[in-house]
Length: 187
Image (tube, rainbow, N blue to C red; front, side, top):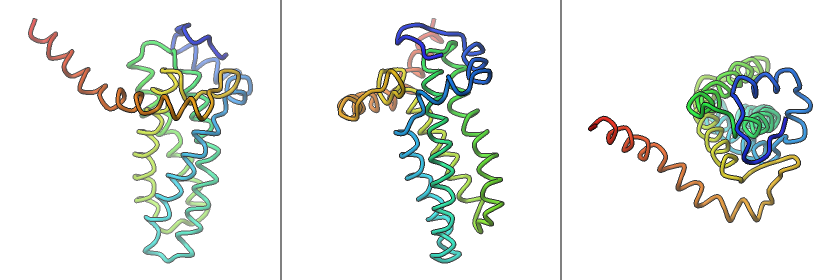
């Protein structure tokens, strides 16, 4: 279901395609970039939150989370890529920012319960927050032509050159929306 860069698609249709054709929708654009980033950041989050239980437990939590995050981060990146042109944008943003990390949190909780991770709640909260922000940023970057996988994969050089401007635009999105809302409210 990979779209051309400019073709908008209905959110419901895009989600249906991912659910009905998961291999075609997720394997070609599986995002190794998102997977590596997620494994590193979320693995470290679980390491830090489990240090009070000792280095061995913290290391075990890091490994469990890094493996889990590598798999789910790549899938979330692939879904984000499939949704990068989905409309309405506000609903797609909610799915990417809250929905996908929320579903991942449920699975993550089960994995860490099975692994008997000692300080689970702190790791889950921190991981959810990091996942939500990174999923939102990845989706935003993909909407702007960076961090793509599959047949539309962008090079690391392209991503590194593009990401500073995209990051600044991402950070300014909320102030821009608030200003636009306030301008509309005046009239």
